[in-house]
Length: 130
Image (cartoon, rainbow, N blue to C red; front, side, top):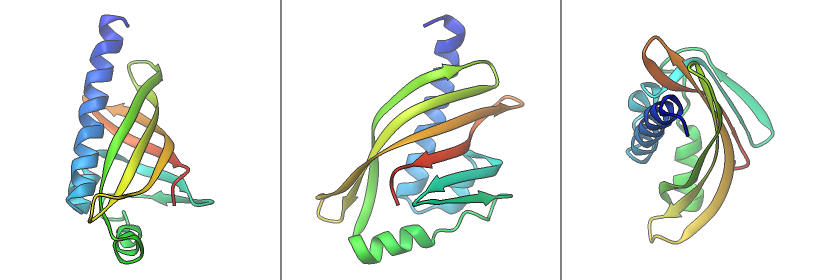
């Protein structure tokens, strides 16, 4: 990994860490701070575009809490596949857990992070999860 790639990777990993912390805190505004807009999410057979901050629907997490007793999620793997100074592709997986720490499921995803100005943010997510 070149010095430049390592720098990109560190910045993107920090963004992914902040995203997961915000998700687990059920904090939509903090999640928005880790995204660039428009933000695209492809999961459960549908594509959703969030045009601006404040448009990230939290109903998925409300449903997960009600139906599956979802409490938190955790990254399992995060592999930088490709990058340049403006965009990075990550193959990753995460596990969703119930309130008793039992596993709901492990899901593979592809995230695209982009750099706007000096800030890396998640621009697109494609997940095999719901």
